Image 1 (cartoon, one colour):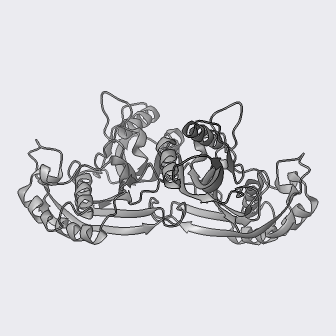
Image 2 (cartoon, each protein chain N blue to C red; image 1 turned 180 degrees about the vertical axis):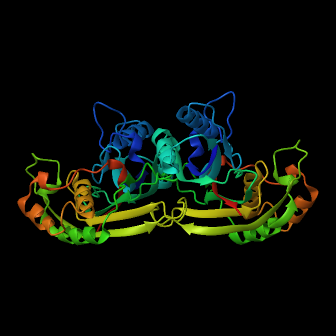
Length: 256
Length: 256
């Protein structure tokens, strides 16, 4: 069987997340498997680098699937893009080593969270940004982010209470940038703050809970130094709220 | 009666254009008038700087309306944004001179047309860009654009055959830029070319027909120098095709 690696983009708005479910056909993995199984004439399983939750987007999700086919990678990509809905796209494809596994071989991931820090409504990126009207203190959020960077037990930053697996992860970098809207914004009205998280892996809801915590720091409800205690104590209730899925995009999955 | 000037953003995808129609409630002007009439308790007319066609977007449409109210401009804006659908927004409001008229006083407008010049599919901006797979010659399009700049009779560049009004307009500038996608693009996959048209006014379909003509120049189907003849002869069939509405956005309306 040949093994194909694909890079996928999708707008998560309409979907119940990545992972296929018995109860709904409306997942990214479900759509891809249905399409490829139809193409192949037999059941095809698609392995993603990880799940994305309902409403989360991807600019560079990686997946792989095994297939007996005489088609070239380009032909498979063309077939997929012809039949996929317009909010899912294959942007790259290659034939991978037989043993390549998009989840098990992943060495790192980058997520981006977009916040529009303004009271002025916005129209064009509304599906991709979370709006926070209260003025955010970027320097305080950067100080707090420094506490999260490095190798820590992120037990306080996951919604998964029962898992017995390790909750230790390494975050290489958290970048917080102010982005001036260059196109659609009426001058000064679209103040975007973009948060970029790179690490070796992320727990269930981890980015969105870190984000909720950073936003509370930005509103001076939590002091940056308190992040050390929140990590140390490992209690979910000490961290911030889960922010909405729509601001989150999986940007990249890295392999060695 | 007080006179209020508003700056509006809207995503045109769902609407039958700006202008209210008997046959549908689904127009921007129709939505605004229904909302303001409800607020005022009597019929309110909303005057736009000009019509935008079905599917065309606006980042800076200007409109005005007269109203007997004790509300402040900020209160009116808040009321409107609370009740407007999420694809229409008031981004600025001010009380204007009693005689201010958004269409009659307009001195100039800027439109932007976005082309994604790639065969790789795209997901995130798909509602706002027109995809052209064939490689476009930017230098040739710039040469052609120079012929369109200035004061000309644009009869060949409008779909309105019967109007007896003047078809002379002045285009101050046509800017053609290559934009590297800075966020969602997988490297090299999202080659955007952005066309910005500034002028004292535009005829029905004029920007979209100029765009279709420039694209044919970019594909070497029309030579840049031929633009002089197309203008001179004034025949619609010599100009290029009407490009899709979704790539077009009204960016700004200028007043003295």
